[in-house]
Image 1: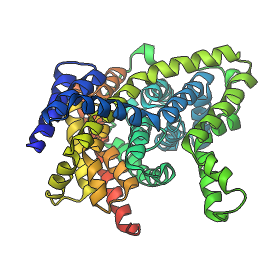
Image 2: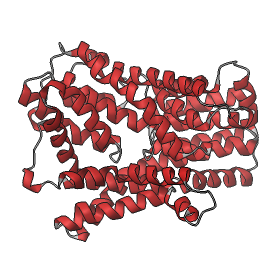
Image 3: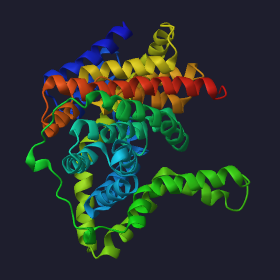
Length: 440
């Protein structure tokens, strides 16, 4: 009976969000209340679980996600992303233009959330396509593959960050493992697969061609790279020092603090505020206005994370999570494959990678207590599954179609296939790492 209720809950989410066009946060609240009543939770316990789930889901991730959005907004507004793209193209030239844009997407995709990154890099792609007379899809798909993979795999992006918190995984290890898996996934889905797409005719709309800033208005090269990648550099430095210095040495407490993702992001935002904002003559008020817009942009995602947390806690409070764990163990599938499949199925039904990842995580969470699965790899397996088979119910599908001015058929052939390749290669990478890493 419990399994049937959970199945109906997932179908209700699909129906409310995809067909009913209900705002996802509201859909999660409605389904959470209905599931709690169906599972026999008294009203007081149901509401307590709802509030606890909302708070727990946001408490450990809201700082990282909001600060990440602020950093990404500043990197975009200051011209640092354009400077990085310019440097990369100058360094590697036309012959390696696909690989150059792919690496550029990897660099600027660390601080930029997907929607911001997409709108920012597409004009750069079109400028390169026009300048060198190359097919826009052939040139641009590797860069967009980078943005998509980072969005699904790596903190500080919303879904991976929330999954790290839910599974009590290590943000640093998840980032390192995710990067190891991301590179081959991007290469196969980007430069390699894009070679088959040279025949796709794409005539981007004139309004989407880059409005390139003069070089004099851009921040310096070192400043652009260092400010954009500072979260990665700080986290890597802290984790590296922790690995080589004595665990009880005098610097240990400081390193523990510096390895905290919220502290890393806060320091990065403060440094970027100075280096990309104040030092370049931007008034503090203007920088803060940009940060305010970044918070507005990320508010809907934070609400989705909170809603998913509420549903998860209702399942825990009712005891349904234990029955879910037992039924999932009965499938005989490895947890990493099962998490990938759940996320992929929800992604196909709902369209949203973030909702797919968070919903699958809520179902998989009870399994962690009864399985030796590596939580860092489970984050990545679910993240990979959440990217699979983007199609007509995904806003990203239509963004790509309209910006590149393609038919639905060509969008399915390019965008949907790229996302699916990323998802499959991501799962393969997770399974290889699981085989190579020592058992827990």
